Length: 349
Image (cartoon, rainbow, N blue to C red; front, top):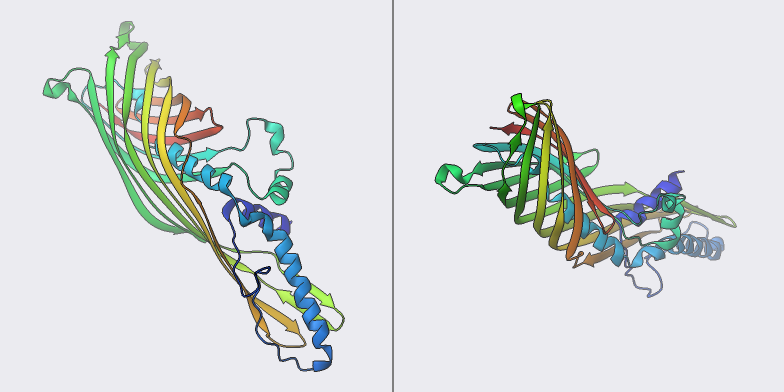
């Protein structure tokens, strides 16, 4: 089980290119000083076998352009955080604080995910990625107070660095949103039903995500004659993504029984994004009975300079409206097998 989990993590979070003094190897081994020179040949054979085991299981991850593109797409999806699209048409201002995840899925078919760990193990590269924005605040203003009717403008910003359970995360999200309410709200008697009209929105978002993590992979032990070789690899992963997104959205929403709020819409994101996935690895090579003869090193980098430039999408959301207090769960499905899912809380006045 540990070996399987390690292979999944390696395939999702790394892209490895190998460098060493040997063009066909990624292990670098120091000169050996065995206690018993009579078994030197067996020690050499055991080290070579350990190398073959590691190399055969990591060579698949030497090139992963689809994975790098998947992370770039996911960054663009999650930049829609702290949305207010389900509450357009407000009288004065709206303030929301939200979090959002974005994901790029390899396939629409649920059957694809049967034995997904084996697919990752044998293919090494999948069109997949993920991004997470822990928090962003957005404040919107009805420009009608300045004499510009039906126009709403909002700015948003979020930035933080934190550590959690072996992860180091650094993110920033900043954006400008403009909405035009071209069809006004309609309300039923005594407010049982409120239709929020139609709103056309656009803007510009910039976001970067940096995540560092450390992972201990599975040990490799080889027995060749009287020699035993143990390799204990440790890897540090760095996943960096950044994106510029221009959304174009047509949305509407209804409020029912003063409390329940449902939103629906569609549009597309026009995006430029990139990702870099880096790995730095180290492992001692322990040979018995020869004490500590050497070490193994690995390093590599995979970049994805472009995401999908046009991402058509369907928009939805469900929330509650308790007077001026709102709690909203926005969600988006992208026709390129992507999604985002968020949570927003705040005030609308």
